[in-house]
Length: 168
Image 1 (tube, rainbow, N blue to C red):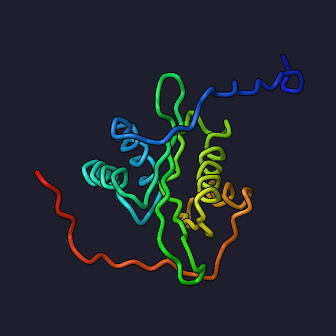
Image 2 (image 1 turned 90 degrees about the vertical axis):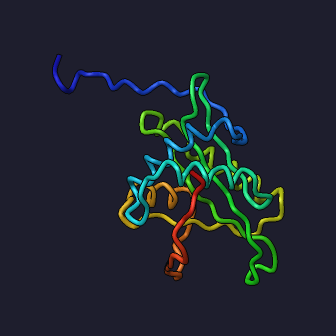
């Protein structure tokens, strides 16, 4: 068979559904965050910190999380945290922790997770959603731009105020 006569095999569409995350999803979400934080130069994977952060997030009245499930496993996640924005005169949200397991990418799962956040925001009066993307994660930036996200003139700055303390 010559290179010109080979057929391109299109990957099978993955069956999945998006559901609100629960405490039982924390182990799978922690593993996904480990993958995400290996891509982001400002963060380091630390499963104990990620587990505690997810536990706090799932208990928070100002945060939400969703997971993408196949019949066998959790393959993606996203979180949304809300604040009051004086610029918007109402609620604004930070989309965070969007990650799809590498074997399940390019099946619409990331887009479905983002759209779940946007639908929730519209339904709950959240006027603006913003996110941060690692400057070196070109794939993520292309993905967000394709979904009509716009780069702002703001620069992200951070400062740690205290070392994290977790119960032993």
